[in-house]
Image (cartoon, rainbow, N blue to C red; front, side):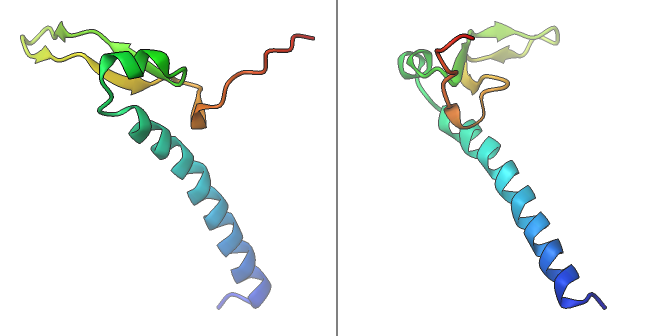
Length: 80
């Protein structure tokens, strides 16, 4: 059985991990389903043009989140 301190530490670690994963999920949901114009205006999203896969399946154009842009935060504009 875990002691109180161990159980508390485990709960804190679990909560932190869950929140970290949750922000990526929220970002993906933010871009998912957007039309082309709002997608292109959102710096956290990217529009993927329609294409045909090698197996002949046609994939419609869609909006997706850009890699490395969790939470949709803008880069700092100051350069050092």
